[in-house]
Image (cartoon, rainbow, N blue to C red; front, top):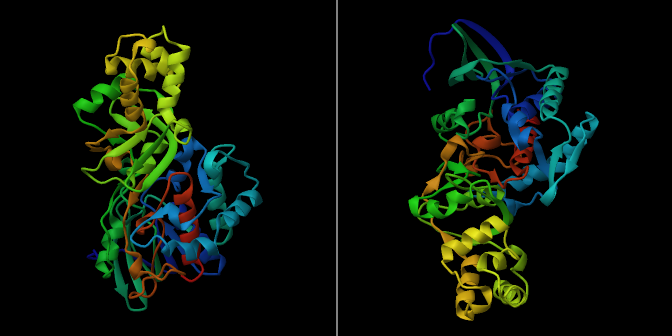
Length: 409
């Protein structure tokens, strides 16, 4: 990354590139060790992803942290860091700051009040530790210096060369570009010889071709619990039908495992997945109880009424339930238990919550997040090839990896 001409020069111990969750944690921890810390970000406000997350309530962690809930070339890499600064440690910080929280489904923890409380806590901690935050400041270049690193910054027309013993790269991934996401972290990694794995949008809604959309679009706005699978991955969560395709937690989760050309399978009645006889048994029971009714009413015993009517119309079965042969009910049951779809793609980085892939963990120390080959250079948070499930896992990775780097940077 070439270094342009500089204006004034500054000296710090640690410069953190990015004022998101991971960057703020790294800055706080380094400053608490007495290091002179400068955290910079090109955005006008710090922690914007924190502020908008969880519908403005910030799903800040999850009680069920485990290696199998993270993706990457080596997801077990994350365990060392996650154990050293766990969900319980961050919960203790929330409690210490007086921020009320509650548990939702599947171990997800949310703030009772607005997410900006979490940002305010982090900014207060950084200031109390003596760290400096500089916003609306772009990183123009990073280079090896005589005693560490030289980072060229620009704030409007003014340019500054900052010399630092350590650089913590917390620039995030490519998701949500309207918030200023860039590939800067990957460029810095490549510049210093670190490998970067393939990056792609994750935790993102699916889009479909005209044939599938003809079935899905009329149900836009309908949400229901489903079991979705792709390969060996499977999730029991809610699905939302939209004018563009399928969204909701179930689809966001499975999108991290899907690849172009693959199919996904949706069980529309997951509550019957383990029941004796499954969906067919329930349809036969409905047939006995609603023999004179049409298929839509019969299906409404299993599915939301709007979906039941639509499903019946698509099946083109007009006879009453009592006259539907068992073979036809069997075909309906199989479709409901295994609705196979081939997504055209996803909505991409525009709506993706995170980026899958990133700086290869083979090149990083699992305890400190430091580059093995480039001393004093650290990568934390989303820029690293560690991606968690939906539900607070990615925030916990940010807190934990930022904390780890801050202990030694």
